[in-house]
Amino acid sequence: MIVLLLAGCAQPALRGTGDLGLIIERAAGRVKLIETTGRRELASIEGLGDLAHASVVYSRDGRYAYVFGRDGGLTKVDLLRASVERRVIQAGNSIGGAISQDGRLIAVANYEPGGVRIFDAATLEPLADIPSAYGDGTRRAKVVGITDASGSRFVFSLFEAGEIWIVDASAPRAPRVEKIRNIGKQPYDGFVTPNGRHYIAGLFGEDGLVLVDLWNPEAGARRILEG
Amino acid sequence: MGDRVVFAAVFWVAWMVPAGALDNPVEPRRGELVNMVRQDCGSCHGLTMKGGLGPALLPSNISAKDPEQLRFVILHGRRGTAMPPWSRFLTDAEAAWVVELLRTGLPRD
Image (cartoon, rainbow over all chains, first blue to last red):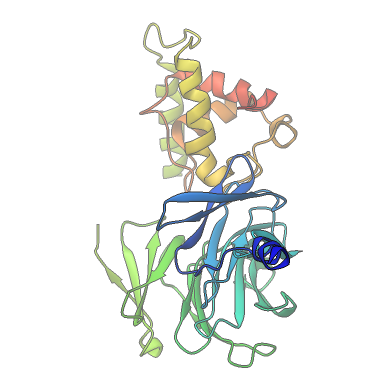
């Protein structure tokens, strides 16, 4: 009876992952693990590097969070254990990332060196490096507005180049890149509409937004909401 | 050519400082300026000034630059880049104070 009770104590309480989340403490460089049903803080997790401009995506099953740090760190956090499971420094200065819709790939958007790197979501093993070279190919743009799209695709914008790229990573070690050029001056962020069909980027260098129809990317980008 | 004329004109206007605008900021304004540098400038240059969409602004990055030119860029922005003008939010003296703040490094929280 006593043995059974002790065994019971050693076992952490079972819980679902659906209401777990992370809060990034930007200045402190920590993340807080929270649960949103009881609105409680469960743990504080350190060792994730410079989180001054960090962002986070979650695995499909809600077990893991992937934190993209400003210092190029990519950290996989186990939400059930409240601990860092894996961590790689994959660039010098990065802005964010996305997870593929099948949950298998992590794509990170980097400022320095400019480009996108793709990783295995389970192991964080690097799978592909896509430099954001533009113009005569010697310069690399800062990558912004990265997001997932249907069928192992990622979409992002090139700040200095004024381009939107669609990467098909269904063969992750040999991704195919489709480039849409002359979309406007200095795109600085982007997202996919809730129906999954349109990628919209905001322009810093002009007053307006551009839209790409992901069902028909050949049509290029068109201006919407002119300022 | 046109750009140069505008540049010269803006530069000239920048020298026409209203009376009082040359006073050094005092508290609580200093605290507001530190917060503005960290949060607003920091949204491009990085919360810790290590750079992002805009270049790094740590003391080591800007110590060799002319403070007067830095003040001018803060007030009037840089054409063709994402750097906007801040003259609507800062007086001349406040911009000069921000330059000194960056040259010596932001205080810890």
